[in-house]
Image (cartoon, rainbow, N blue to C red; front, side, top):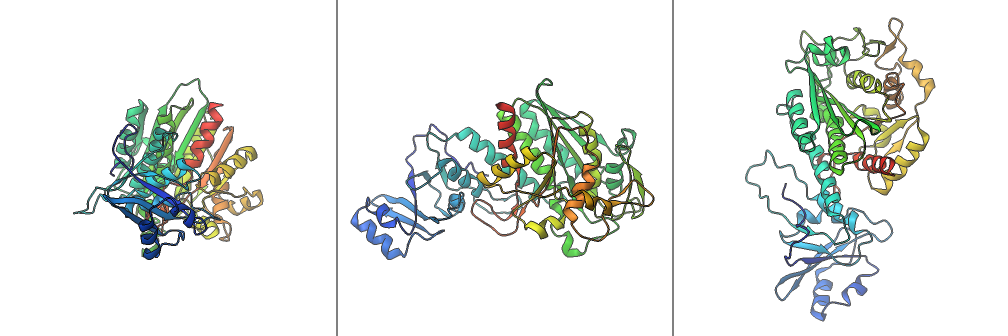
Length: 459
């Protein structure tokens, strides 16, 4: 991706972008020459949200006007401009209430996944940030989001468990992080039976990727990301339409990695651990079956009620490992259930935690950063739906109700020592383009989580 921002010390002349509303259009135009006011009027630009007007001057493009909603302004109003404007250099002019958020929107909207497109131009518009905007922080955030989007957008033929591990190694290398892997049948020897069971059906070996970074004396923050590089559903096979987006079933891993990179890039004073169980849920003679029973790393036996509920299985072993260190904060991200999408749609992931104070802060931060999340209850009475007559638990609940809640309750069985645990059931995909959010793979929850973590451990 072409860098969306000019270097901070550039002396290149830039074109102003002014945010206007229907109500203040006349006021904004008062500072322009009469011929410019006439041009804008004749162009049909009225300051409606989403409208834009390229204002000519004696030497070419002189300014850009973009309409915003006065009562409900989009924080990422510049998201579309990064792609639609001529490939010139710009800066924020008047009318922007929050220059940092507007600038972030520009960078998020500049993203395009062009890896497999031939003959496309990489040249695009660029923005010079205001002197009071922290360019390093914004570029770190934009780069992390781009990393998550790139990984989710990659097709499964080019992103198997091994390739995901290689990407992790490249992403964390600049920060001096350590990386280890437990691969294939070694998962059994190291007591990760659920990860092995899910990934054993594929000829691409499953693995547990383990990243460590930071001072061991600092508070432990552990991130766990679901890394199912493709999900056929296993022997409980999905219909063809259900598989179309299953390359994104490693969206939790992509987002956990992106969040880890943000934390390391900012040098936050934490002892960070990143765990990614990476598997392909494939169909073969070695695939695990409905009715199978496995003993998990934690010791709980799990009856397989459905092989298409595989993500919670690999997370269970990874969470159990993470919990053994009793981290101060344990976060897992996973594209876990369709039930979450039915409840809240693609834009608002639910999250679950027992920690009310953390939940309140995360909820508020998510809306303040336009990275929306919504807390859902770990409703204990629903746990009975996971009962098994022949094992400690089933991996799916009977009855079909409250699927996202019961999945969270299943995961909760494997966490007991962490001071705070939060589970996020993300979608990791933007089905219809919005300002700052191109169609395709998406980073969800990580911008809000980063801010909460940074505040919690730097005070």
